[in-house]
Amino acid sequence: MKLDGNTILVTGGGSGIGQALAWQFADRGNTVIVAGRTEASLAKTVADRPGMHTQVLDVADGASVDAAIDRLRRDFPQINMLIHAGGVMERQELGSGGTLATAEQVVNINLLGTMRICEGVIPLLDGKSDAVICTMSSGLAFVPLPATPAYSASKAGVHSYSVSLRHRLQGRIEVIEIAPPAVQTGLTPGQESRAGYMPLDDYIAETMANFEQVPTPPENLVQRVLPLRHAERDGKVADMLQALGRL
Image (cartoon, rainbow, N blue to C red; front, side, top):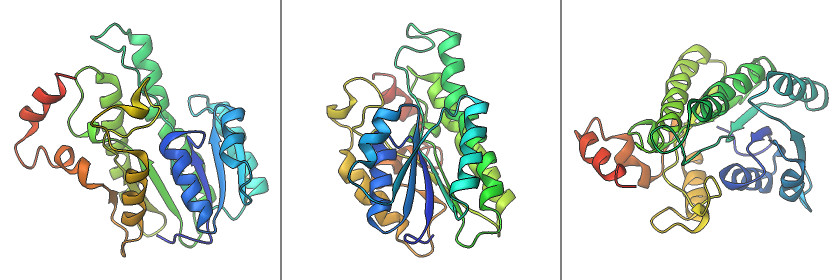
């Protein structure tokens, strides 16, 4: 994975991990288009940062994805990378006060949204040198948080889709799955300062160090997510579920 001289679409670029990664790549000399649902938050991301651009995008809406792809094709024909960091999490979910409508929204954005944007971008990246797609799952893709079954299932789906996509695109487009642990971001209310969660700056620093490895690992995993990633291999799933069930 080449870390400079790219043209990169970063979804979820208005806040959290997406915003932080967008800044990191912009600072390394890449052209970065940050995408998200809210123009105001995107404007804050790119303020006083040359080489950054905005694109309003709702990955839950096929028409919005199509419009964004058309604009990329027209205005950024050199695009060779996607970092798909957009997603949602609801703590009031199935079994904890939420409804199937909530679950549908979570799955639509996190899983189907990943498929919509990746499938839309593939024709733009195909044939480009150093072409990369980065998906974003979660440590909860490997051991679910019982209080958020739809979120956990959606991220497990992203993991499975990423494995399939990597096989399908081998030799054409590199596919890297980013699987964060619990990070201090605005994903859920109060999470920015929640005790026990990984500070965002620390997470980004370790994630970028993983990107710098040669060759780039197919899964970008910081140390704090490894117990979840390897729980099944290590026979720790039941223990992990007990611990997560208390959250």
